[in-house]
Image 1 (spheres, rainbow, N blue to C red):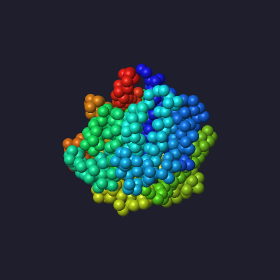
Image 2 (spheres, rainbow, N blue to C red):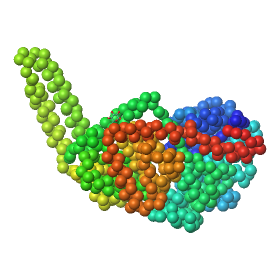
Image 3 (cartoon, rainbow, N blue to C red):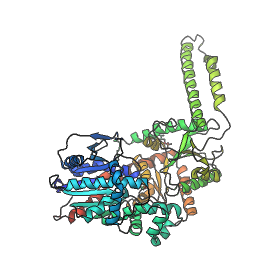
Image 4 (cartoon, rainbow, N blue to C red):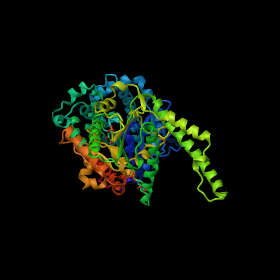
Length: 604
Ligand code: G6P
Ligand code: 1S3
């Protein structure tokens, strides 16, 4: 291992800037990368004008290669910050304000066209931002590669098209920098999968340029193709996306780099099971507030399912989940099974505010609880006194111990809480309720939280955060409180959501079209015994897949508590397989290729 003679910079739009899954990849991988590369590792990310991320800690020590490059950039007039990303592993990080490039963006765009035939003439704010950022990254790397900054060999790893523009420049100018490009999806794949029912069948015949123009994403596709084709090593996160890359990007990945996660296992097994109960009770509180004003059901026999992700209705499999849950509802009604399922749909859609009736119902339930707590205390105190002074040893009448005030207050609260309105499907007032695909689908299949429905729905069009008054939980706590995560994606290069369930010891459903599901099928035999259910979508039509998912869910609801507990234990013990400490080896493989390409062959 000769890593002291090498530098690795990893560049991504989502460094200190959470947008989606790439943030999770870079952030969760940081401890493993710092372990391998130590001081020779540094991340580069964008800084948005005037917005210094809270997770960035500046340093005043510029006495290493990265620091020297930063000082040189500052001398050239750039606003560049050097410090640490305050996450596990505390990697070094450079943040660059790209806004000053705007004044000469037309010139940068001209050279992208002139030198690399990347046409960025149509207006797209994100494309403009990323081109400006790419220009600053290019300059920083040039400073890093200058004699006097470092004598070490430089390796630069770029993630996704947003940071793809410098790669062609590095190659064309033969800069002494070896490059790796990883794509986490293809631009065209994402659009085509949403709009084409048999996407995987038509894929081999796709004309990328025609489709890129049709979807008005030509600039992004050109940047993506240029980055992939000019990088020394090209990787993507799954075999499925790898095949797509060959057709849509024009290059087969050299290495598949699956995504890992940081697994924190408890020393004692019961600890994570206890957490399940603790957070399930919080979800119970929400469910009581949301449903019990109209009808109630036995919470001891209630299972919490959830699906979540960005609002990509078809790609993330929200459509299939709703159809399967409708089928499950019918199967449960028919079989007469005495279990209730609540499905939470957690995503992000535009809304005005939390629905006032939902909030009101929740507040009134809290009022009922506070009143009951006061009555319990009063009864307890009076019962103790009456028992202590009780001459004839008779059981006192408990009802007499409650003041009329509290009786009246409880009655009044219950009166204003209880009503016949069906519990709302959506927790928030959506900006476009009429055209929301989830709402319309639920209405179409008539899943509207009727009393006799065995499956109830809560559509929460916002990501979960502890400041949200409905749950008061962090997302990872919410996951732990649930029984099953349902993610039957249609287009999903990897898919962190099922992996997050596994990391929390919660069984999950994924699909054979997600990179993660495909990885499990190839690497974990008898996946169902690990609590990972895989819906076959690749060779099944939509209706068959919906029925197969419904059957999986129906078998899950028939498990006994003991079986659920044992399944959670198995899920938890399989989580180890997805720890970065193992999966980082694929990144090593990718770097090995550029290191082999260096004049001296060395092993990492
Ligand atoms: C954990 C706890 C048990 C509890 C169970 C409930 O395993 O350690 O005490 O009974 O969760 O499981 P359930 O699947 O019914 O939520
Ligand atoms: C992408 O984010 P997405 O949700 O747009 O990258 C993620 C990280 O590699 C991946 O898990 C996901 O499938 C991709 O789709």
